[in-house]
Length: 197
Figure (cartoon, helix red, strand yellow):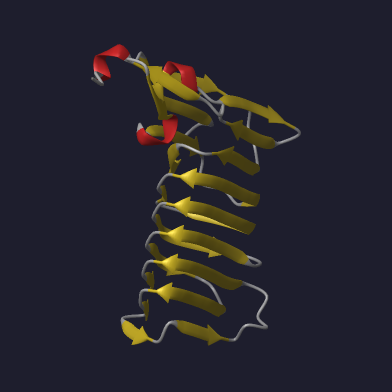
């Protein structure tokens, strides 16, 4: 029988140099981007699944190990046990943001970026304030996407099984507006709702 006490968990803080680009490639973490007074990354979760964190040439790169764990003779995929990654940085504009995850929710209170892409197979995405200079893409197979305030001049929104709400008004399963603008917000979800204010 599975016993959560058999799994060693850690709370680890990584001191990192300043960065202006973020690249996260993982399969199992919930990710939070927070504004603070320093650059840091913290991880809470299984010790075996601790990420690799490095900064080189201003690019913060975070990768996770792909592992399965054996508990009492049964193999459990690490995706079943949620891990959390918190990326803290001063309020600034990022040149680029790339987050690619299989299972995990992604949230940010304030995100200012020249260009970005968030891709998750199973997870919700919640960005309270998005300021972007160029295109910003969000893709999820299963999950709700919420974007609070944004300066997007154009939208390309699509859901296969859900509904779209833009500025409090219900739209169909597809919504396009001013797609030739420089800073278009593109959101695509197969199963989930899209909310943009």
